[in-house]
Each structure stands twice: as structure tokens, then as C-alpha cells.
Length: 209
Length: 209
DNA sequence: GGGGGCTTGTGAATTCATTCACAAGATAGG
DNA sequence: CCTATCTTGTGAATGAATTCACAAGCCCCC
Ligand SMILES: NC(=O)c1ccc[n+]([C@@H]2O[C@H](COP(=O)([O-])OP(=O)(O)OC[C@H]3O[C@@H](n4cnc5c(N)ncnc54)[C@H](O)[C@@H]3O)[C@@H](O)[C@H]2O)c1
Ligand SMILES: NC(=O)c1ccc[n+]([C@@H]2O[C@H](COP(=O)([O-])OP(=O)(O)OC[C@H]3O[C@@H](n4cnc5c(N)ncnc54)[C@H](O)[C@@H]3O)[C@@H](O)[C@H]2O)c1
Image 1: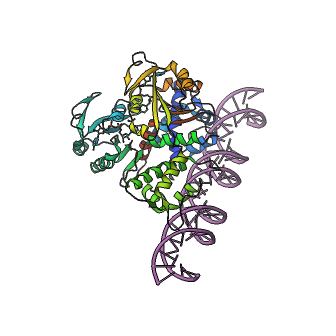
Image 2: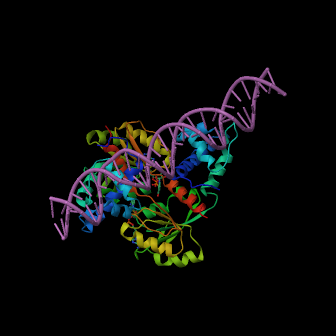
Image 3: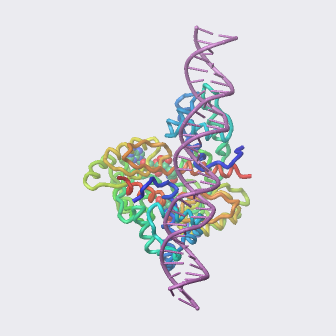
């Protein structure tokens, strides 16, 4: 659908719009204008319309957008109409928090496997799922393909685990390790670096008059 | 120090450069060029030099940068020469993972208080710190000021908790709740929205040929 | 059925970020 | 001391993202 490359900032905003639309839907609104969406998200109406225009034409002039219809379109554009099969590798502090996170499941990201290398953890159940040995990933993925691997192992192990996951044939990766990871061009990698976020905050706090 | 507003993307890269410099330092290198820094971080040498130039002149022409010296400068620019006093509000799954996260402490973000509203949690110890009632924040902050509050409560409670934290006089906030929060202009807010990160991944995976 | 009041969709203008390209220093070696 | 070789620091050029501004379309009401 998108004719030209879509900027990352645009995708982030689409994700926000979807959340606002769901709020509006829950509040019983059937119609919404670009102005109202913009006000809710701290942006401008022109920005909203421009963002949407990359994907087509969704509103009615003079009227605005049908909330239900636009919600549906956003879901389709973001790829949220299907379920995603997700595994988590590294069932430590953050890995087990993620395994239990409802916000994950709610949007169709279904956690279908947990993996670790620590013999003490393998075999334990974490919220109805057994922790499996990391070596099993390749075969498990062959039997029942996985869409996304969430990496929550220590930074020192992260590149090796990423290589294993890629070798197993998984092409979507979300990492929480605070390091620069390398993947082949056909694999999509998204890193959430909390250290960087903290440092951003530190910078902002330091440079206020 | 910075004469004009610094772009967010620049600050993110500074944070990366710092990590790479520390690696180089550990590897025993004393000198590094913008080219080497760029190669490590997947950017260009012009970008590295431009980023640094906002803050001054750190290198020697023909030679490059002194690793130790530039590391120091990056720390100063990012505000990492001091310790930051951090509290965590909401000691649930993600809150307790964060409370135990060494990556936090390592860069001088010292967790000095844990708060929750659940009577069943209040009084418990989580890694040597007692969980305190949220009502105590205002007084605690008066006695010993806090720099940063990490918000890890459910989305439905987040705005109310942010208001309490702001009322207590804390001016740096990092939130993990997947919603748009509102703070006065003199408070710096940074939101890590994992739902959005997942949706970005979903979008990328859906729109690959 | 025509006019007034809205709001979209989108080229054009502007602002912001990145890349280019080169003069200015610095070093090393003869 | 002079030349050859590096690499920085930075204006200028390019490219990307946001904002402006308005014609086109839709609804409602008279
Ligand atoms: N804890 C946090 O709040 C937090 C926050 C942000 C980022 N992170 C990052 O997330 C990662 C995990 O942090 P954590 O605090 O959960 O650490 P942790 O030590 O609690 O958990 C790491 C887990 O990974 C497993 N593991 C180690 N090597 C492995 C391998 N080769 N294959 C499979 N599993 C392996 C360990 O057995 C352990 O269960 C780190 O990179 C950390 O920097 C953590
Ligand atoms: N679990 C995850 O992996 C994860 C990942 C990303 C984002 N988040 C977000 O982080 C937040 C917390 O998630 P969680 O999974 O840890 O939830 P949780 O239910 O495990 O923990 C929430 C904690 O907040 C406390 N709380 C509730 N209301 C409060 C109030 N008014 N004042 C103080 N404390 C209060 C609760 O008692 C509980 O201890 C949510 O907004 C969630 O969307 C969680």
C-alpha cells in the first residue's frame, strides 16, 4: 500500500492515533476530526492528515472520519489484524515481566514460547508456559514458525542469541539489551534501549536553565 | 553549553558514542577517529563530527580524539558526572524488574525509594529497599529531594500518579505506561511505550515485499 | 436547489537534519 | 624547515519532515 518509504516518526504517530481512536470508540463517539485527533496527541491537524494521506483517503470533507472505520484502517496499516507468534529468550527479571504483560497479548502478540540457557530455569513454568532450552528454538520454529523473538538476555550474550534466533529462521527481533546488534538485511530488528532513554532524561534535566 | 536547541536524534547518538568510547577504552585504545566511531555505530563520520560540534571542539586535526578525554566530555554533556536520585512508583512486574536492574545503577541512577498503593505490597522489601506508601512521596521528597520518578503503574492510574509526583516537586519523570501523559512545562517527561515499539515492528514486518 | 459553514486532502513553502566538500591544523619524516 | 599525509571542524548543498494555505467536496438548512 505505501508508495514511498514511510518515516519512522509517522509510524509512531499512527500507533498513537490508533490508541486515541480506541479511546474515542470506547467513549461512544462515532465521528472524529483531524483537529480532535491532533489535540489529543499534541500534534497538528495538518500532521494527522498528512500522515494518513500516505496510505489513502479515509475521511469525508466537511465531516471528519468515522471512528470505527478509521480504527479498522489503522489496524490494517499497522499489521494488527492478524496474530503474531512471539517467543521470549532470557527469562530473567525483564523477560518474565514481559511474559506476563497483558499489553502484549491484548494487541495480538501471543507469547508462545519461553527460552533460557540456565539449567536451573529450564523446565520451570512461568505463567502456564514451560521454559525451554535455547537449543530447541531451531526445531520448534521449524514445526510451528515464530514471527518475533524478544531478546532479554544480558548484553554480553545478546549477539550470540540473535545469531541463533536468525539461524533458526526468525525474521523479527525486539531486543532489550543495551548494545548495537547486527542482523542480515532480511531481518527486522528493533532495540529498546532503556539506558539511552535514561541518558536522554539526564541530558534534558542537566540542560534546563 | 549548547547554543541552539539540540535535536533528539543527536542526543540518542551521543549516548551511543559514549557506549562505544567505553568499549574502545576497555580495549586499550587511546585514540579514535570520527570514522572509527561512525563505523561502530552505523552512521557517517560527518554525522559524528557535526554532533560533537554542537558542544565544542574535542579532537586534534590529523590525529582524531583522545578516547579518555572524549569519554569524559560525553559524560559531562549528558549530565552523567553526577549521581541521580531515582524513585520507582508501582512495584509490580516491570517496577520490580527495574528496581533490580544493574544497568540503572551503573550509570549513576541510584534507586533510593520504592512506592506503591497496594497495602499487600507496602512494607515488603525488594532488594534491600522497603516499599513505601505512595502518600509518603511528598514528605520524603521534601526531606531528601528526588531527581527522577519512574512510573510503572497501570495506564489507568498513571496520570493521577504523575500529578502526585509533580505535586511533590519532582521534575524528571520516566513513564512506562502506554498512554499520553500531561505535565507542566517545567517538568521533563520521557515515555517508553513498548506497545508502540511492538506496533512499529508489526508494521515493518507487514510491509516487507 | 443553491448558499454557507465545515473539514479533508494535498501541492507549495518552510523548517529541520544530514551529507558534502574543503580549508585549517596537526604530525611525521626527510 | 618544508612537504606529504591525516583528520578535524564547519559553511554550503542537499534531502527529509512539518507546516501552511487553499481548492475540492460534503452536509444541512432554508
Ligand atoms: N531488568 C531490567 O529492568 C532491564 C531494563 C532494561 C534493559 N534490560 C536488559 O535486559 C537484559 C536482561 O536483563 P535482566 O535484568 O532481565 O537480566 P537477568 O540476569 O535477570 O536475566 C537474564 C536471563 O538471560 C538468561 N541467559 C543468559 N545467557 C543466555 C543465553 N545465551 N541464552 C539464553 N538465555 C540466556 C539468563 O539465564 C537469565 O535468565 C539485559 O540485556 C539488560 O541490560 C533489563
Ligand atoms: N509488565 C511489562 O512487561 C510491561 C511492559 C511495558 C509496559 N508496562 C506498563 O507498565 C505499567 C505496569 O505494568 P506491570 O505489568 O508492572 O503491572 P502490575 O499490575 O504488575 O504492577 C502495577 C503496580 O502498580 C501499583 N499501583 C496501582 N495503582 C497505583 C497507584 N495509584 N499508586 C501507586 N501504585 C499503584 C500496583 O499495586 C502494582 O504493584 C503498566 O502501565 C504497563 O502497561 C509493563
